Length: 287
Image 1 (cartoon, rainbow, N blue to C red):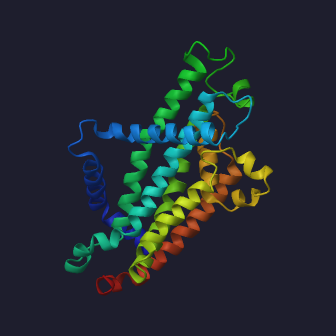
Image 2: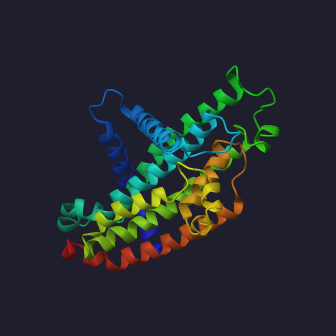
Image 3: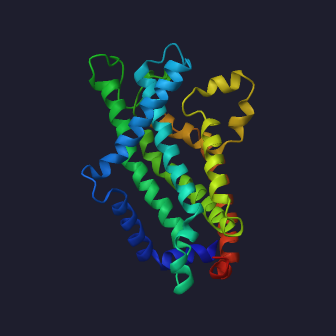
């Protein structure tokens, strides 16, 4: 892992150029530009709320108003979308850039890294929508609770919408998410060279993983049905739960879950980077 991190630092300018190019390529020729980063999760929110809340009649807490449920779901959708996009794109990134790897001396470790950074930046464009929604419905709208105050307090204790100083802990979540995602990306990108079906298999597994994570339904339902163990072994549940505590309820993240996710992220990064660097000399032949 040390050699990989050293290479990324040495090629940080190239990494930055790839990130900028990717962000521009996402919306080139688009009249709304980066605004699509906001539109996409909101459209998904309405679709999933219609399916889960109206069609399937999934019940949340009786005390949770629709606006709170919507923002709760939106926070999960935005975080998951960034993760799923990164995993999917990094799995096939070496194959997609075979011309660079085969013809020139190219630091291929930049490829999964720039995709991870690009997705995190794109995610950061969507997260303020959740924050603005909480500010409006908790503090500014005519129906906002009179006891709401920036900092949680009673509102947070009642699981009402709130914002607080816990927002300063978001960089910790970004860092942990980056480690976990890029580590997984390094492993999958390399493994895909040995088994090209990996790219298609990951698409299926990500979908299964998404519906196994409480993004569109309350986690209490999973526990009450006797499947609480699924949450205990699901790193993305730990991460999304921490994001929601900060963005929706104004609480500090669950430090136990965040610490557990950081440890898993570090191990995944170490294993993925080691696997990647071990087989890097063989990449031109495998491609």
